[in-house]
Amino acid sequence: MEIHPYLSELVGTAILLLLGNGVVANVNLKKTYGNGQTKLLLIAFAWGLAVFVAAYITSKSSGAHLNPAVTLGLAFAGKFSWIHVPSYIISQVLGAMIGSWLCYIIYIDHYRITDDENIIRGTFCTAPAIRNFKNNFFSELLGTFILVFGILFIANPNIELDNSPIENFGIGSLETLPVGLLVIVIGMTLGGTTGYAINPARDFGPRIIYSLLPRKNKNSDWRYSWIPVIAPFTGGALAGLIYLIIS
Image 1 (cartoon, one colour):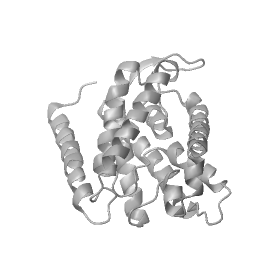
Image 2 (cartoon, helix red, strand yellow):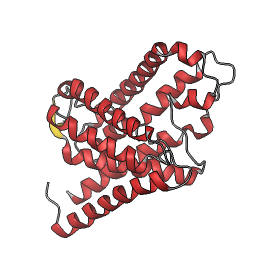
Image 3 (tube, rainbow, N blue to C red):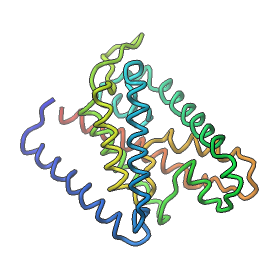
């Protein structure tokens, strides 16, 4: 796909400044998750590498969407059959639940001796650094938009699915590293406000598991939970629609 050179320069420079200034803001502004915290680097790199590993394993069989917002964005862009969207999303949520439960089992002794319930919940799902639902929603929407918009330029028609009226796109093995790097830079630059769920399954599935844990003082924060679900869906859909318009 080719974009007009002027539009390409506009979009590219806007993304460059958004992410470049984003990391400066995340590191220096008060009460962001990145302010004075070297652990942000570990978290951002680990999530990016986790995406790389998971995507590499699943790239040939499913296209490695691993994210309902990605699946939705590909569908809106006309690169993935709507027939398979519900099944993909259900599989992603169930996978997220299983993965978070396995993490809990591995660290169960450490969970038992940790008293801060916010820290416990934070190992399962996200929470805003400053609670402002309007801004939190926009942060998740924009982060997911950048993720899905980037993936749309990376994805290739490499999945063969039954009953699909169109050629299905996904991430191939050669595209897994660029996507992992994309997740790393989003975490470092835009993740300071909400912890960058940018994936409805990543937040909703583990939040369900946390809500089922036998802990006395648990607070699943369902009042906030709709934001890391609806905002990524919205960002993914917008990315797909804009890609479709300019392609």
